[in-house]
Figure 1 (cartoon, rainbow, N blue to C red):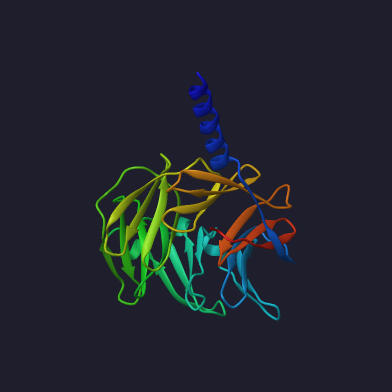
Figure 2 (tube, rainbow, N blue to C red):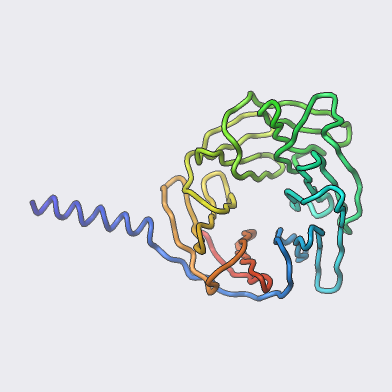
Length: 263
């Protein structure tokens, strides 16, 4: 009986340690501005956000804007290369490429492609290519925007995409069954595991992520199936963004940056 009680106490201690551990952050600065959506920052310190469907880049000394209201709502923005920014207008099946001063350098209408494409996810990939999830075939492909060539790299898969993100070499997404997948530029697709229910999420690696649920923010590691509450001094917030050990919290007043070290 004593052994059973000891095992139960040990089990609950481990469970609480895995789920209820809290992190405190160190506030760095606050930047005031009004926006509808916050996109992120680049290595040069520029901030990117959207207001009234206008894409804005802001530095300490200058502001640039890109406006194309005829294409409707901006569905996604990829700023991983500040010299080649990708704006995706899903309603018009179109991608706009911008330079570092938000000048339009290329416009790609996927409806004009010889292979039918109905894009519902896009992002910048390695070698002048774009990641494309083609909803017509339910496959991931790569579109060479210099040659206007499209190559399918995966077999079809089931399930709607709840969230996706990409870098030069990988495309990651969570489907409507909370399954977390990764695809490489060579077409290798891997089921990484299941993730907790979320309102918003950002992948940190292929094992770790940060997610928002209600007014709380959590760090989740797949290897340990461990969830950690992230504490900060905001009672409510619209969005978060993580990069280079900086956690940015976006509210109606602007952004607050926190230093965070992920073990």
